[in-house]
Image 1 (tube, rainbow, N blue to C red):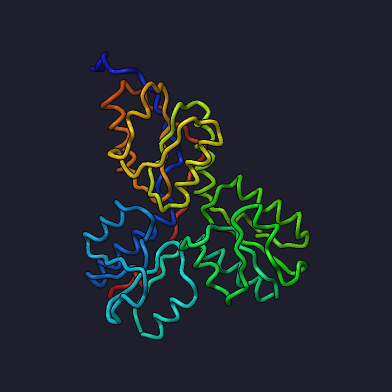
Image 2 (cartoon, rainbow, N blue to C red):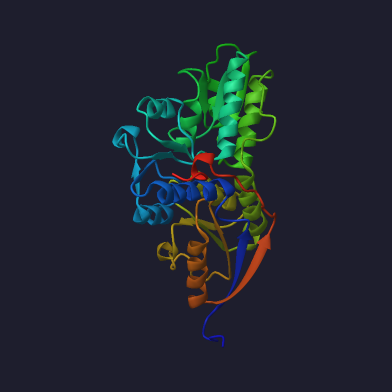
Length: 319
């Protein structure tokens, strides 16, 4: 029976939302490594940017470290879904460690692209966020100075290149589609000969989640993105919602982070989640709204995803 004392609320649930194929694969890699080799298994950097996921894997026996030097030689190490500079697997091989690379195949595609352009004598420009592990990993595929980073259209005006006729660009996979288009336009305006990727570097999951937010944001008084503060794709979803006309867009790690006072008086809310947020946290947020409002949940699906990535062969064979 509905509690008539509760205020009515329309809750728009975006789809696609939450886990993408690369995140799914990375988590599976850690779980399969624990099954194969037993605990502890070391993971260099958070496997994906989500505290709930990391804590869950830690409880199962994964040890998270920021540096390969913090890993013993005799235990397996896994590289996170964001990718690593070339120097990291080289150092692991030199120490004769067992290592498994959980880099998302769509990030690996960008690495291969950058290497191919470099072999053809082109200097690379990377559109990305300074210090983000994916940007560090991609820039680390090539020697120092071969990849120049730009974060905004303004950066394009100041970038110093070797030869404006011999340039290519790649992008981080988790950026805002619209913001990136502005930076690409600035690059092409300043360097007409610049070579771009054959196919968009921003991954299908990032694009789909942003499109779903654009579809619901204009109808929402508020929109919550379930995700971690260090998750690039989750933070982009908040920005996309604001730009699409939603007056209040916030990132929450889980239901306990919701600022209920800020939501006072709302009649409609949108809920989505970044690519590294598990469905259990989305359910928790929806349940929190059902407890406080007479909520009508409407699913808004803008795309269907059936992408699946295989785990590395080393995990499909017995120890």
